[in-house]
Length: 86
Image 1 (cartoon, one colour):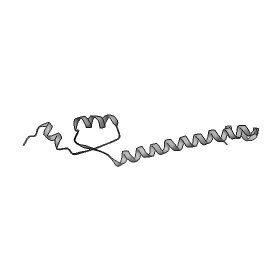
Image 2 (tube, one colour):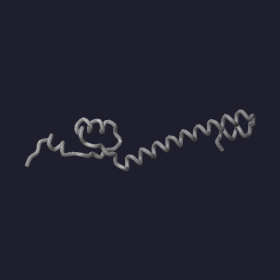
Image 3 (cartoon, helix red, strand yellow):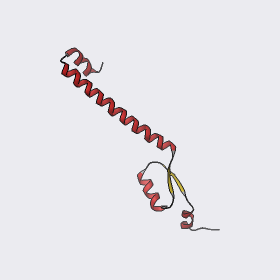
Image 4 (cartoon, rainbow, N blue to C red):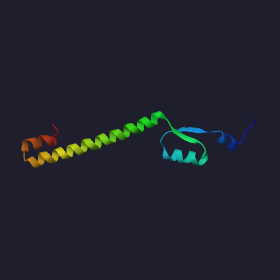
């Protein structure tokens, strides 16, 4: 039995995707009734990217604060080492 593309599309209930917004938008337009499900690999990958970005931002903020404390202390030897990151 040959089914039409519309009949075939209506049979699709779930679609597994990555986190691409463009891909998700296209699927919502083509299959508005289907539930979009993010696969585990891409979900964990995105979570790790976010945690890494926060870690980098916190580390940078702590370095800037430490440099400011060193510079305001007036210690030239400590200030020199802090600038060289020894």
